Length: 113
Length: 114
Image 1 (cartoon, rainbow over the protein chains, first blue to last red):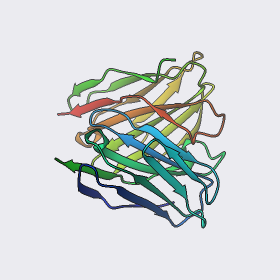
Image 2 (image 1 turned 90 degrees about the vertical axis):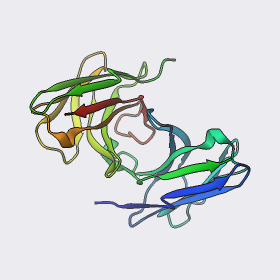
Image 3 (image 1 turned 60 degrees about the horizontal axis):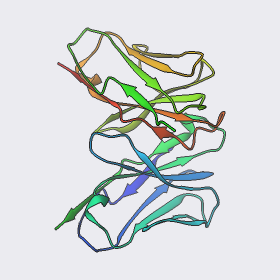
Image 4 (image 1 turned 120 degrees about the horizontal axis):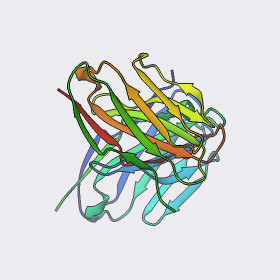
């Protein structure tokens, strides 16, 4: 099956720092999604990318769909305490239904005061 | 617009029992998917329902089953519970027929099997 490698597994940063995380795949995807999950809650969709090379922002978050269609990146600028959580990437093949959505294992973001 | 609603939020069961979890999708969404989330395995796809029909199924034993009603609400059932079934069960809805990419998740049901 498809595999998504998400890195880093965890990040310990200071408030105000910028954050970068990425996902790579052995397969090509048509869509890349980035979710954030707070403790005890379900994942919340942050950004959706539909085209190779696409760069999309949502406030302080910026995500890019890699040109090879096998990777994606998420950057968070000027981190704040509420950015703490687990960030998941997900790759999808259009029309594949939910089982066409493959999730990474997540990046745990921890912000030190 | 109300989000995806899952009930109950927390559940404690013992081995051998069965459990039913409920999910109400976003109004107008016809696709409902279920995922199991554990610290070690991450998010694993269970099944997807669209218009009361199971469209896709993940690699889980037959003890895991589901159904969808005409109002798009869905239920998931796990029979003969095992300790390893302890997990956060997430329901997600989507408006896209056959798409499923843009999933909107509920808060989940935290199941503990003792």
